[in-house]
Amino acid sequence: MGSDETKSTLDTEKSTVPGCGTTTKSCWMTQVLLRIVLFAATLTSIVVMVTSKQTTNILIPGTLKRIPTAKFTNSPALIYFVVALSVACVYSILSTLATVSAFKKPSSCSAILLLNLAIMDAVMVGIVASATGAGGGVAYLGLKGNKQVRWVKICHAYDKFCRHVAGALGVSLVASILLLLLSIISVISLYKRIR
Image (cartoon, one colour):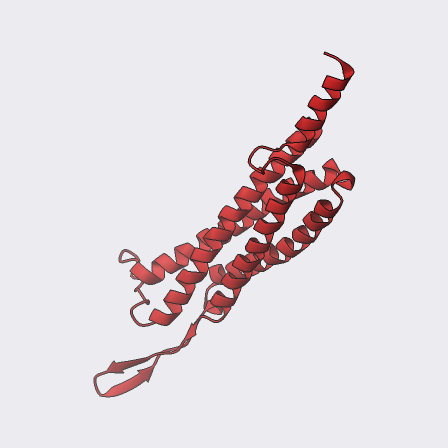
């Protein structure tokens, strides 16, 4: 194998990343696009959860009783959900900026940037997935209750609140999947870069 063939093979290996298209630029562009969608998903989920508030009246024979307002701050799990998705939202902005700078100057992109993105993407998957699970557990209790410990279901009385929570959880599940895809792409890019 001549030196020209070796150089051509090395250039081809550096420029292709499976699952990201045929060039490094298309891989960076894919990451930028996914990170922008991640920002939109996390921001939407935060806004929907924060605006979930409902006060309802219950008719007890002879009286009309006002029940306390249902809002996300009533549950520590839903507060954790909002905080965790806020962290992921800020991370998506910062990582999008880093990815855009790497896209504009791919020759200056170091393996350290790819390593940091891979590690932080994996951390964010864990944070967003755990927040989605915690919020999902509270939402399930609100929907079904728990007869063994006499926790009553509340979604029949707070239907609007429960719909908001369900919507926020659904969008955060999409954000978890996007973060998982970004983590895989970052690891593949890092592997191709150091190989």
